[in-house]
Image (tube, rainbow, N blue to C red):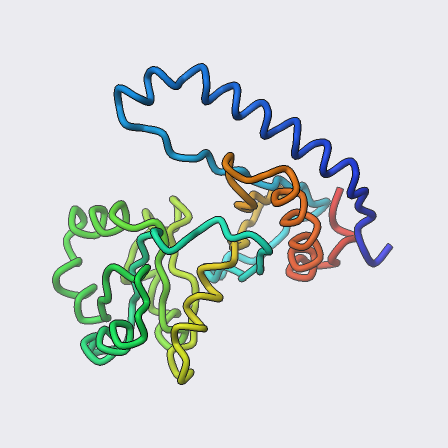
Length: 222
């Protein structure tokens, strides 16, 4: 079997049941959410179990395109660039990229964000980190283990491209398969404010891309 056998009707039914459960769960917590202002949509993850150890821990998340993005223009993104960051910050602003809230460079990581507390605050201040793929190998040492334990390691982008808005938007409209040395994989695939059709479509379309990133591909999925 070179491809996973996927029953779309079953995926749609499962998506409907899960979203119905999450809606009831949210309703039960609505009073508390109103008091705390905590009414954010809940992330839905796709869980896969492999027969053998899945991915080498090379710290590089694999990009998986989605039909319906789990992020949006309000997502807070931090972009990490080569030195100096000002040139890239200017390109971001000129391109009208609203979701990039902060642009920092390697020197910033070596100075401003060198203290542990500063790096932790940086990690917790943004939903998604993107990094120029030319400096990505430096990130494990510069960011530290806490970024990677929280699955906050930056996703690679190509800042040599002339249309960086298109490149960064493609990254925003994707989910990511993070390295794992175990047999379980967890991939963000949607949220509780999706329709069953959106969630089903994301699962159906993402699975072939996910299995391509796994050794032995579909044969390695239980």
